[in-house]
Image (cartoon, rainbow, N blue to C red):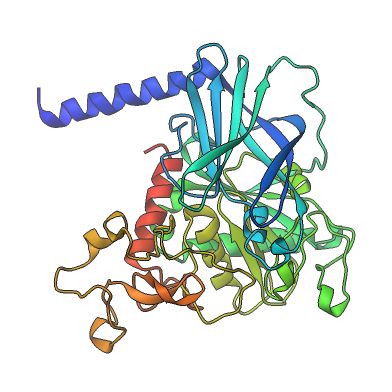
Length: 425
C-alpha cells in the first residue's frame, strides 16, 4: 500500500473517531456556566451563579482538547462516571487584566464571567483553574452538573434575530465569529449590517485571513440599543446600550471594553460562534480584546480597519502587543524571569519554544534594530508594553504599529495554527 494512501486512511479513521467522541458525550447545543470572579492583586475566588442551555454549538467537534497552552485560566470537563477528560478550553478575562492595575493593589473587585462547552449527554464534572506566575495551574473551582437538572435555564435573555455576513458552511468546520452591535439604535440597524460587511472585508484584506477566507463564518445580531454611541466617562457621556461598552476602561482613554459579560454572552448565543466581536457605534479611536473572551472596535474611525484586525489577533490567536511606548494601566504584565506564553514575544528565557526555528543562523540574538535587519526575523528588544527585556520577532508588525496587512511571519504562523484548529484540520 502506498504511503499516501496509508496517510489518507489514518486521517480518515482519526476523523471518524474524533467525531464519535463528540457524539458519545455531547449534543450540538451549548451549556453555559455563569459565575462571579472576584479578588485582588494576588488572590481570586470563583462564585457559581447559574447554568444556561443555549441552542447552538459553534465550536469544533473533533478537536475537543485544547492544544494551546495559552491564557490565564483553564476549563476542564470530565465525564462523571469514568473520570475521562472530554473537553478543555483555555481563556483569559478582564479580571485577569485588572489584577495587574494599581486599583487591584488597593482593594477587591468582582467581575461577571462564564465558560461554555458542548451540552453533555450524561453527568459531568467541571473544574476551573488559575495560572500562577510560573505558568502552572491551580484548581480553584469544581462543580458536578447533571444535564437533566431542571434548574438549568432553558429560557434566554436578549433573544434577537441573526443574519449571515459570511456563510461558508458547517460551523463545526469553520471559524465562527459573531458580531454584536453596541450603540446602534433600531433606526441604525441597516447601518450595522453595512458595517458588518465592511468589517468582514477588513479581516480578509489581511494575510493570512485572506488566504483562508472560506474557513470563516460571520454572523451579525440585530440587537438595537436604546441610545446611539457609547460611554465616555471623562466627558460625562453615558449611553444606554445592549452590551454596555465604555471608553476609559482601567482609566485608559482608548481602552473600549465592557464589564457586562452576561449580556454579551446572551447576545452572542443568537448564533453559533467561536469568537465574539463587539462593534461599537462611534468615531472615537479605541478598542480592545482578550483571548477567548471578546474583542471590540469602533465603526467610524480612520483607523478602524487596523484596530479590527489588530484586536482580533489578540482575541483569536493570543498575540501580544509588540509596542512599548504607549501608556497602559498594567504593571509587570510579563515577568522577565519567565517566558511569556504569547507566541510573538519572548524574554529569551526559552527562545527555543518560540520562533527560533524561523530565524536564520547568521542573525544575532538579540537582533539590532538596524537597516540591515529591517526586513528580517530576529529578536528585537521592546514589546509587551516595555522597552527592555521583552523581544518581538520583527522591527514592525500589525501587532506593533498602526499598519494594515502587516503581520510578521511569526504572527501569521500563530494565526494559521488557530484557523487549522477551529476548522478541524
